Length: 208
Image (cartoon, rainbow, N blue to C red; front, side):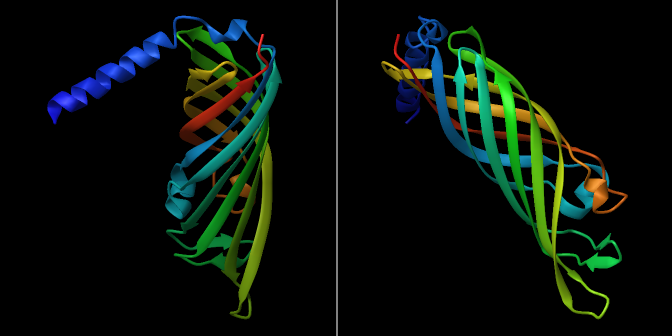
């Protein structure tokens, strides 16, 4: 069993090294990317006390010329709240399912640092739609839909493997900070949150 595992590891290392001999960035102008994975919210303070560290799916598409790309990313979280929260006099009870859907439209710059490893910093505009239920003044349930918007900055780290003339695939890791006014929901909540995600990217280019 150990011998087989060692063979697999050696094979993967050889594949990565062989695919890294030639830089891919010299051979295309136009790029289209599609991918997805798993996202996390790394909350803190009152936001953590109320919502915790949410996790959920993420998908994205991107198109670009040379090193500049336009990206659209969406992430979905659905967590049961950990404490009661006052929202404009309405109470969102503990253990209430609360959905957060993030839509991020960003511009990024993809730069190869060697061996088909890429760094891709970005800046964008992020929208978070929050839906949940609260207890109204008459004791009945009231649906709350609240949109909060702000800026986002982040960094993608990507390793591509070429598997066809103009097609590449690889894992990515993303870390970001969303400047979002959660305090519009409750004044004790912060004005932003960290997060990270990871998954797989499929990249298609025009063949040169």
